[in-house]
Amino acid sequence: MFADAPIRWTDSTTWPWMFYVWAAFALAGLAKPAWNWFRRQRAGGWPIAEGRIESVEVNKPTFSFTTKRVEKVEPVDEEFYSYPHNLTNLLFAHVSAHPEQFGTLPKPDDA
Image 1 (cartoon, rainbow, N blue to C red):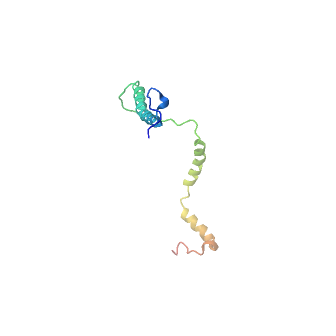
Image 2: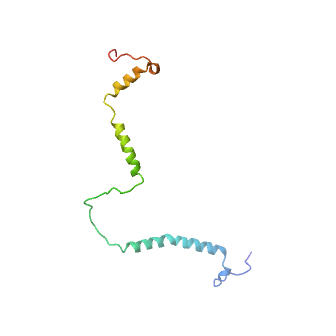
Image 3: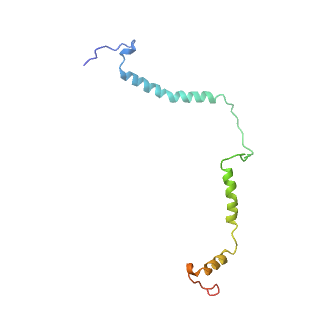
C-alpha cells in the first residue's frame, strides 16, 4: 500500500509522475498572461496620438494577378451591354424566319 521509496523533495528522481503533469499544467497556464504582459510592454513604446483622418488616397497597384483578367473581361462587358435597341423586332424576325423550329406566329399587326 505504501511506496517503497519515500518522496525526498530534494531529489527529483523520487518525485511522482503526477508532479510533472501538475508542473506542465502550471507552466501552460502562465503562457497566456506572460504573452499579454509581453504585448503590453512592446506596445508601451509606441507614442500616443489623437487625430482625425481628413483625406484618403487610394492608388491602383501597378501589377496584380487580376489586372490581366479584368482587361480581358471589360471588352466583353462593353459588347454585352451595347445590345441593339430594337431587340424585340430582331427576335420576332428571327423566330418568324424559322417556323420549323418555333412554329407559325401571328403577324405583329394581328396581335
